Length: 80
Image (cartoon, rainbow, N blue to C red; front, side, top):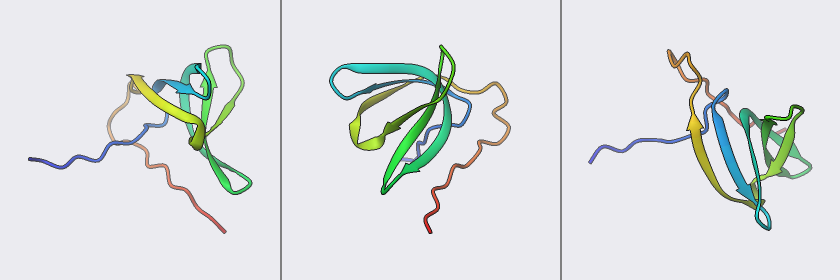
C-alpha cells in the first residue's frame, strides 16, 4: 500500500469545525503562533483573518484546492 502524506494547501478552501459546534469556511492562509500555541489562519468568506488554535479543531473538510496545482506550497512552522 502506498503511503501518502496529507496536508492543508495554502489557497485551498476548507470548512473547520471547532470548539462547541462553531465552524468557519474560507481560504487557508497558513499557520501562526499565538504565544506558545499554534493556530490555523483562515480568511473567512466575510473577509478578514481568523486564527483558530489547533487544540480547538474537531475536524476539517477540504472543499477545494487552488486552481494552480503545479507545485503545492509547503508551509513550515519555525520557532525561535
